[in-house]
Figure 1 (cartoon, chains in turn red, cyan):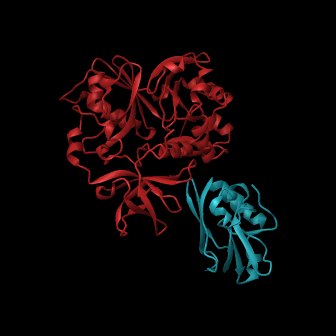
Figure 2 (spheres, chains in turn cyan, blue):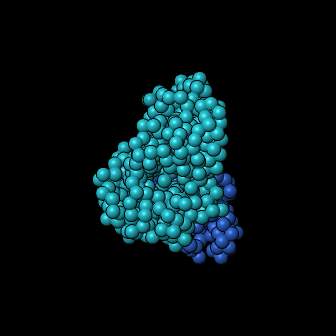
Figure 3 (cartoon, one colour):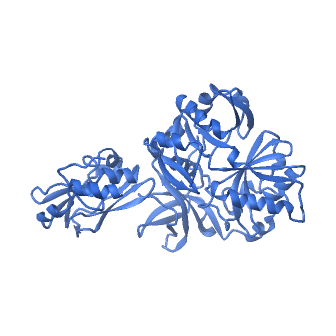
Length: 358
Length: 128
């Protein structure tokens, strides 16, 4: 099991450590998941996301290559900007979802999920040398070990971080990336995140990670674990690869179809030809209980129409929310459906995410 | 981890008070609530329901997981802690007090003495 550079910090804070995608990670601290969640919604929280992978794509054809390899359009990125994207296979599904940052002209930093780094790296390498429209003049490198990654999220994130970094954060707008220093340490700062709140992701050297972490805690930022990261992203309506998205998911049938841009891309024709017999929806339960991953979704007559992929009760609103793949006939906003919880149907309504807006 | 000496315990992490006029109060242990994490929903049994010892009687749902709660003794449910429907977090903050789940009129008051005492339960909890 691998450890992030912040492992000892988590243990010192009495974090509850679990195995996640091959890493020892804190699921929560003694504060508890609901309080960590509220800290991010109302103030600021920090997450260790150093388990995530960083790949470098560079070379004269880097833009053309990533335009072919991913579903969003990296050609639209000016240097110092990033975009949410997806990596597709040619069988009508996905390999991972990604964040793609262009740092300089023909150099991109690609952030992948921990469980998928090897698959993403292997796929990009193979695709780069494949003929038609390649081979591309690019190098793909796995830089995951070179970076620690901390996410500082919440309405107070900018204020608290501003005192620590050199950069003028008002100039670092959403989806921008800058190189700066944090208390003298070199960091790469992106105004991105996975909680639906304003916030930043701080790429730093592994050797500096503990110092950055402690400075943030001293600034009054609440340490948060993967449990709150999951409830926050679900409330914000973001997908988690392995739950909402997988190798069979057609992104065109999800609320994230906007990612797919109209340009030639590997596997895109297969995605388009697939149509949408099922769709990814949000739902709000009217009864009590939590619609958990794998629970059956029913129509009003009690027939199975799909499965829940993630569910929780919002610590903020106390409503019970979930994402689910269902037959397209039951996917329209307002459709009355049910989720089977311990053998009983609990009424629900199709409700497009996000379930919360800052 | 708190394990009050005056209670008896089930290996499935429920506690029961000593029968008074044939009635015991049941809840989950401090160890159990700590393992579950923050409780967000509770499903309680119907008053009047007859429970066998070891029968699934309630559900405590945390952010992380849903957990069945078993009747530690056979008996009839005579009261449930309705306050938990609005304030389930009492199970986390006061597992042996405000966080009680239901009261049973037990069929055999002597069976309570056969449950785990605090020391025996501490050994169970230590094994996880």
